[in-house]
Amino acid sequence: MKKLIDFTKDELIALKADLEKQYAEYKAQNLSLDMSRGKPSKAQLDISNGLLDILSAEEYERIAPSFDYRNYGILLGIPECRRLFAEILQVEEKNVIIGGTASLTLMFDFVAQCVASGIGGCEPWARQGKVKFLCPVPGYDRHFGICEYFGIEMINIPMDGEGPDMDMIEELIKDESVKGMFCVPKYSNPTGITYSDAVVTRIARMKPAAKDFRIIWDNAYCIHDLTDTPDSLLNIFDELKKYGNEDMVVEFCSTSKITFPGAGVSALAASDNNIKEIQNRMNFQTISHDKLNQLRHVRFFDGKAENVIAYMQEHRRLMEPKFNAVCDSFEKEFSALGIASWHKPNGGYFISLDVMPGTAKRVGELCKEAGVVLTTVGATFPYGKDPEDKNIRIAPSLPPVSELMTATALLCICVKLAACEKLLG
Image (cartoon, rainbow, N blue to C red; front, side, top):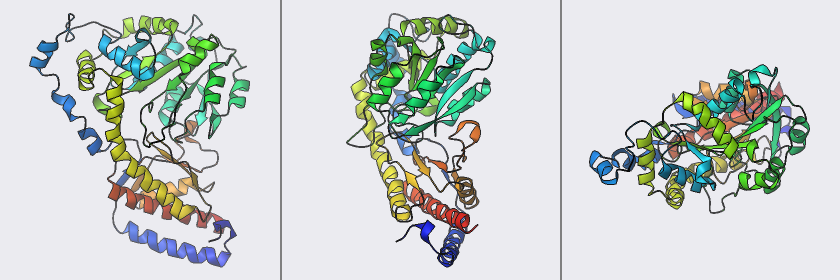
């Protein structure tokens, strides 16, 4: 079959008519399907139900520590939970702080600290005039939202199969007003790309002009593998030490997509200096996070990272068929026509679909009109502005496979229909 751009006008008109007929048939079904966010499915949530009753009053009394975890105190998190996350992230326990339900809160708070009080002994960002952040794109909309909230100017950094454009980054950090970068280094949201060893090494050895330059290393999918050939990511802190840059990165993760998103545990890892400054801010912010929830998670996994990693195989069992279904449909519907590109990730939560430039918003409109909700088109770029109007983030996790197949089939029709309209227009 020839590429769509090689179709004659009459062939495009005929194809468009056929697609419009198929689209009308789906629209008549009054669908209500959601692929807008990376929410775990009910089946995924069910496998963590043991958390709900693992810490009865009798069980707590049986394992009661010397310090009563039901009371105030232990600002940085209970030792058992700090050790567990230290093992997962391959850092020392003293370099871990346990937070509340969401790592997003920890990231927001850290940026707020930099804005209001400064970091690394430098002036608060709020007193330094225009502050800029580097944002690999397509990227995570909530990262962009934090920057917008604090009035931080965002600079797009293109991504490829290795990670962000390091030549561009190394040039931009010569500007002292560039204060940091948000990134998801493993199974990046939404591309699914894992930063190569070469990219991680180049990041670790950077020498930014700003002494208070900080990278938000959002390692949300550090153990979220979906295949027998998972991606590997260099330990950023091991690399930073080689270049005397330990303070440049603060790493974040959580159990949000491991146990319960609404009742998980978050953590950050950082250098001694950064931990000290973050702790100083926390002394004024809170007395402690939910230590009983921390203890529940420790008990659920018997305090061992290997048990958490083994547990993730249950998530893989539920998620892998969904990723395969979406990518197989894309291969079948798009490859011959040459109108879209995507990367089949080895893990994470998203599939990034690039459609014909100038048509992504139209695809989103068509899907919504027919009852399928996608991530808002443009959300994967700062300020919601995709310069080429081509990227769509697919979140396959929530719908059952049967509904996902229906939604994907409709999506493929909408992509082809929008492409026909573009070429005929």
